Image 1: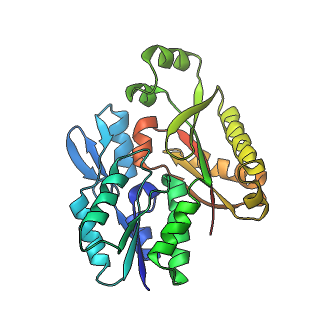
Image 2: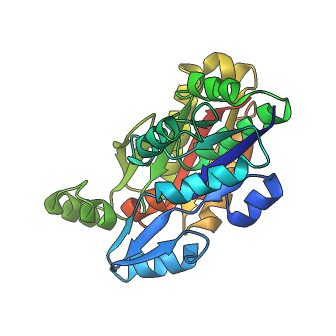
Length: 290
């Protein structure tokens, strides 16, 4: 049984990386002042942040189900089944739309499995890497789907926001709270545990934000994921929004703090998250590995 692995660009996997891995990546649509772009095809990270910082009207959109279906159909010419790993349904309706499409289109019934395992960005990428290992072992799409769903809550992401501007713009902060926060130089720490992007803590310095995120992961590893961490089954990854140098430094701190966990990569955060939090963010995520 040959199973194709397909994800979307919210995973942080680029088109060139996808070719090396032997997978396909659906580019997420991004609307900028009413014009449609596609991540990593007609829109680079640099171009995205240039537009975002210029106060252009930037938002992300759902991929066209027909376009995704064409990619599934092409994969099924060479593979028996398809595992499709989109961003969490808690952050977008994309997942539900494509689940319905896979279940109702005759050519995809029983062949395409759309996974809603509540992942985004670096944790979504880990799901892809796990799926590749399972597929290489000859596991069926249903077996891979079951593994991803059974482990879906075994992950966390903590994000330090560099500016309050975009949380205010997106309606996640009132103008008054954003103004006070900017005046006091508050850096909120957000979390994604499952479905939602929520405020978690408030700090004033970068060093405090990094320590807060490290402490949060330590708490996860001593409670929810204690047995997995002790068994060496947890991975860590660092993400950022146009903040690569700080992300590299943060990675070194993460490596020192967690000797029993593999630190897998340093990646840009997905544009679907970035458009809500803006540049200058740092994040750390943990996820179980197969």
